[in-house]
Each structure stands twice: as C-alpha cells, then as structure tokens.
Image (cartoon, rainbow, N blue to C red):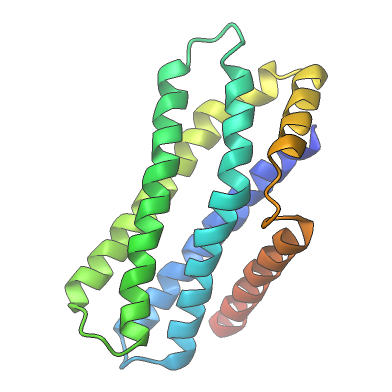
Length: 188
C-alpha cells in the first residue's frame, strides 16, 4: 500500500475521531457555563480543522483524485463534487472559528446558532469523508499504479507549501494526539 494512500486513510480516521471529540466537547459546553478548558479544546480542534485539511490533506487528495480521472472509471462528477466540498468545508470551518472565537472573546452569540452551526459542520465533515471512503479511496487503491504515485509525489514536491512543511505537519499531528488523549482521559 502506498504511503500517501495510507496517510490519507489515517487522516480520515484521525479527523473522524477528532469530530467525535468535538461532539463531546460541544455537549460539555452545552451542559455548563462557559468552561475555559472546554472552550480552549474546542478552539484547538477548530485550529486543527482550519489548517491541517486545507494545507495538507485536501491538496493531496486533489492531486490523487486528479490521477484517478485518467483511469477507466467514470467518476468525474464525483471528483468535482468532492473538490467543491473541500472549498465548502474550508468556508464552514472559517465560520465555525468566527463563532467560537467570538464566544471566547465574550461576544454575544446566540446559543442555538452556535450549536446548530456546529451540528451542521460535523454532519458536512462526516458526509464528505463517507463519500471519499466509500467511493473514491477504494477506486484510488484499485486503479493508481506506482507510476501514478510517483507523479503525485513529484507534484507534491512542486506544490509543497513553504508554510506547511513536515515540521508544521508534525505540530498538527501532535495537536490531534493531545486532543484525543485529553478526551480519552475525560471519558474514563
């Protein structure tokens, strides 16, 4: 199994786990007055969702799915929808950030708006990953050759963001680990 493919699959598992953590944090936030620790963890999760997918995960997926378009499978419409969802998710994440940073800064935010926006965001993320996991990633695994992966790797090297190098990627992996461990400790 190719390392990039494995990383995409691992990213999805991590993001799904982080969405679970996010849901628990929202529930905690809804059951009490504003807890600075809970709000801080929510902001960390949103930081992860703001940076890691947009700077690393989605650009890699876009390159991989682009390779898939040259294969004997008719999925152009699905790839176009997924790419559009990448942009919609980025916008939704920015909206979530604005709402929760407003709460953190003691601005008035309607409670129902905050929680309904958060529920819609979680649903959008989960549905997006479900489509990728059930439709596109199996096709990627089936059709992409070693040559295709070499082309993806070369394209990644050309497009590598100077702002999102391996050190920054490791930082966001550490943020994920920290949030996942805090939530496991809270659940026990």
